[in-house]
Image 1 (cartoon, one colour):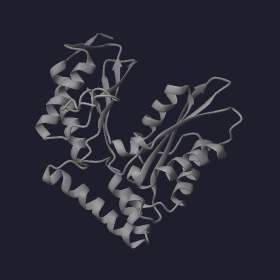
Image 2 (cartoon, one colour):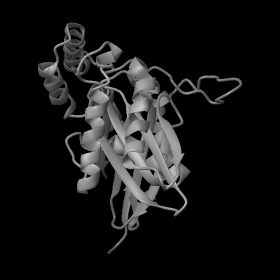
Image 3 (cartoon, one colour):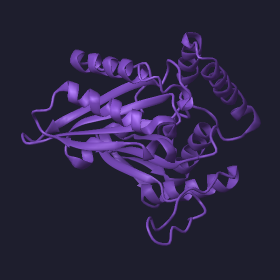
Image 4 (cartoon, one colour):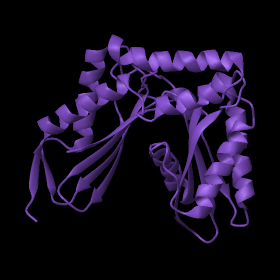
Length: 283
């Protein structure tokens, strides 16, 4: 297969369009999920809030106002084909320069501080993004792009279980995580769970899991049942929409797994709020 050359201008243009898209539009399956939750809801306050969430989804793109005032941390999972050559700066640099430009054009709220502990000075441009690079076969570039708000991210957790832990232990950990979060994670939630790998890879699996199609079921029966059990258990907590009570605390649960060490069973839970903004593009 001959090498394919892609200019940094092409990547920047496609990326800018994608960021603008998710600034004003959520996951395309989200409105239907919220409408279903509204139809099933009996709690008056939660019904009212769900109606407002749906109105917000309609208004954001027509008024060119971000879906959520927290325009988040830009997270990019980038898969680069081994027959693809990028002409220009490295991909992370292209992503960050594009992010700065789009943030200025759209007047996005600056949300990133350079030093995490002491000075906490805002970069003023939402850069740098969180970029995960991997190499795949082929001559294309696949970018999965998300705006991840701080509220739900702050409520995420990781635990290093021992191999003797059961699926029930994992269910309890996820439900405990959601219960501790309460309304702080802005439910209704999408819950991503990473099981296996090691300390860092289970967290990456959990982040990737929230980017799965909302209606997708795990291809392995045991994990599909576990996803469904966790979703039911979470919704039985009664935390409800924005923590105000009701039947819908979560809209979807997705699990991704990886092989792990015989002495380990790492589990990460990444929570995503109702402002679920992500898109996948191919260049």
